[in-house]
Structures are given as structure tokens and as C-alpha cells.
Image (cartoon, rainbow, N blue to C red; front, side):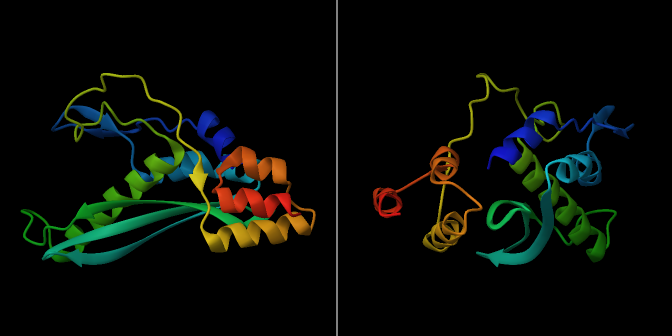
Length: 180
């Protein structure tokens, strides 16, 4: 998604929050959303952030999903998820606060993943990275997404070249494109 790359490169989400006890600055989910909204408008994209409470192996957690799509091609979207455990016995918090805290944390990190925001200096990161970040590999398309992309190409709202440039295609998908 070409527009996402532009948003990722232009997004500036400063750490406007302060934890005086730990003496560090941080950014919240709300800070990221506030910073990205003008870019979504500029590039005609939409974003949703949602979460769901899940349990695996007796561990309850929140799984947040950040979805972005180009409003001109709404059938092609990218989804990034992140999880955060829920401790309902957390000192100083009632159950609702514990769920809310985990939700905010998971949402923040799903947005970090989507927009390639580096939080290496945040307090919940143990060590700085030893290597430079690499470019994100191209995403693959599910069968359903590929079929929707084909419909969009046939309708003249997308091109084969853009699809090849933005996504890693399987051999079968490449052969299907040759038949167009």
C-alpha cells in the first residue's frame, strides 16, 4: 500500500506524556491517533482500531487490531494486531481499569506496528536494538483479498503493476494476472 508508506514516513508522534515517578516521556495511543488523523485525510485513507478479549491456556488478554485502507480501494486493507495480558488483581486498579489499561497498551502497540513507530526508548523496552531497522517485507494477499484486487483491476481502479509492486504474490496469483 503506497499511501501507507507515505504516512509512515511523514508521521511524527512525539512523546508528549510524562511519567514523573519513572522520569520518562512516552506516547499514548491517543497521541498516535491525533498525529495520524491529518495524514489519513491527506492521503484519503481510513483507520479503525478495535480490540477483543481472548483467553488462551488460562491467560486472559486483549488483542487489538489496527486496520487501514485506501478509501479509493476499500477492498484492500492491512491489519496489524498486538496483545496485552490482563491482570485483574493488579494493585491499585479495579477490574475495569485493568481491562482498560491492557486495551490501551495493545492498541498503542498495534498502531506502532502499523505505522513503524520505534519505541526503543520506552520504559517497557529492555535493551536498545543492536541493528538498524530493515524495510518491512511485502505483505501477501489472501485468496479473498486477491479476488477483490482482481475485481478492482478489471473495473480500472487499480493496476497489475501496482499490485505487483505492493504485494508479494504467489505463483498461482502471478499466473492469474497473466490471464488478464
